[in-house]
Image (cartoon, rainbow, N blue to C red; front, side):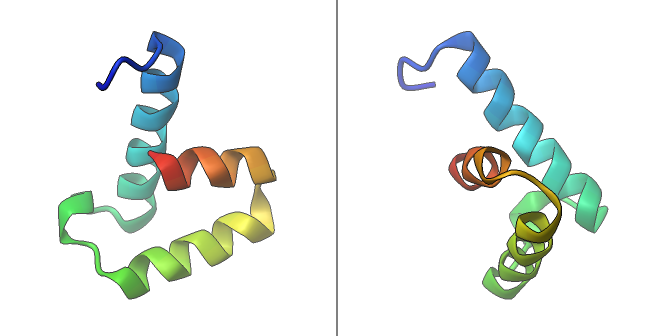
Length: 57
């Protein structure tokens, strides 16, 4: 958790859950191309702050 605040940890956890739900699989099995596709869709549909949080998560 590297000294992160609870709200930051919650936001990063939410990002991982969102990615897992998007692909309906465990995030550990995703490829780089999967993540590129996910973030391209995310950029088109969410705010830049959400994109940054998901990237950091």
